[in-house]
Length: 483
Image (tube, rainbow, N blue to C red; front, side):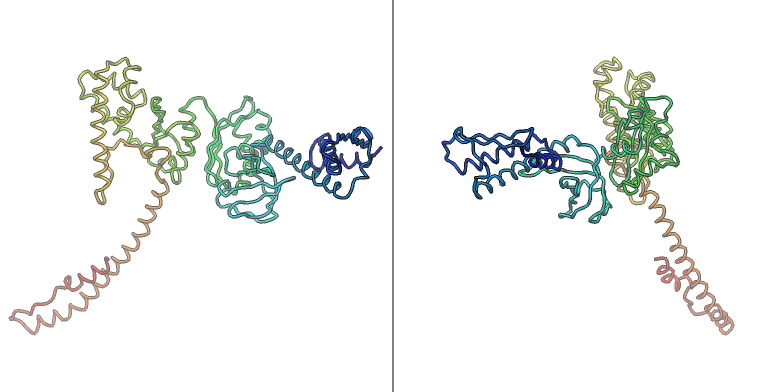
C-alpha cells in the first residue's frame, strides 16, 4: 500500500488539470521504460499500479521485482519519460479547454512585448495578442490586467498557440453578454454587429420579451451598462440600433443620429437610396464616411446618400430619357422608379432582364430603355468630369450621382466642416490685408494733397507738370497687400 503515491498523483492531476487515470498510465509507461533499459529487449515486462492502494506490481519474465532495485540511470529514464508524458497531457488539456472557450473573453496579465505583439499570461499558459488585433491607440504596460477574446487556438510542436483579439466584432458581443444580463439570458438578442475598432460600433438589438426594451436595457440606468463597455474599449463610440424586419425602418435607424427624409430600395442591386436634407448630409455620412459605411454593413444594403435636389435631378433626367423612347408612358416610368431605379445609371447597371421579368416588358423595348439610359449616363458622367476639372466651378445640378459613390468608399464628411473653417480662417486675413491697403492709400493721398495745391498756386496759367497718379503710386502697394 502506497497512499503517498496516490496523494501525489491526485495533486499533480489537479494542478495540471488532467485526468488522474492519465497520470497513472504515464507513470506505468515511465516505469516500464526504466525496467526495459535495465533488462534485455527479449524480456517480458509488465508494470501495474493499483488504483486503490497505490501499490506497484512489476514483473520480468513472470517474476516479480522491486522498482527500488533499479539503478540511477533507469530512475533518470523514468523521470524523463514521466515529465514528457505529463507535459504532453497538459498541452492536450490546455488545447481542449481553450478550444471550448473560443469566442469567449479571458482575463490575463500583460507579460511582455515581442515586436508589435503583446504576450498575455493566462492561468496555465501564455497567449498572444497580435498587433493587428489590438485596438488602435491602446497602450498596455507590463503587469497590467487585460481582457480579450479567444480568437483562435492552434496546436504547435510542444506547445499550444492561443491567439487573442480586441478588435473582432464578437469581442463587443461578448462584452454585452458580460455587462447586460438580458443578453446572456437570451431575452435580448444581438442581431447584427458592424465595427471599426477604436472608432465606432453599431449594434442592432431586439427583445424577445415585449415587456423589455432592448435599447434601454443595453444602455442601463443613466448609461451605466454601456459606459462600462465604452471604458473597456478606450472610449470607442457605440450606437445601439433598434432592429426591425422592415429594411426601410432598419436603414433609418442605422443612420441615426441623422434624420432620413425618404428611402428608395432597389432590390435588383441591393442598393438603398437615402434622401436627407442638406443640414443632415454631413451627419448621415459621418466622419470619413464612417456612419454610412457602418450602416451599410449592419443592414446588408449598399447605401447611397442624396440631397433632395440631387435625388429630384436624377429622377428628372431618368424621366426625360425614358419619355424620349416610343412606347414608354408615365405608367412604365413609375414602375421603373418603384423598382428602386432612380437614375439612368441604375437602369444601365440593372440591364433589360429585370424589366422583362418583373414588368412583363417586351425584350426589344427593354433593350431600347437600357441603351438610351446608358447614353444619358455617359453624358452625365462627362458633364461631371468637366465640372471637376473646371477651376472654382461648382458641381452641376444635372448630376444624379449620390453623395457617396459606394458605402465602402464614402466621402469624408468631415472635410466639409473643415473647408468651411478654412474659409473662415482665410477671410479675416484678407480683411486685414484689405484694411492695411486702404490705410496706406489714404496716407499717400493726404501727403500728396499739399504738394498739388502749391503747384496750382505758383503755376497759374501754366500747364501743371505731370503729377503721378495717387492710384498708380499705391497700386503696387495695394497689390502687395492684396497678395
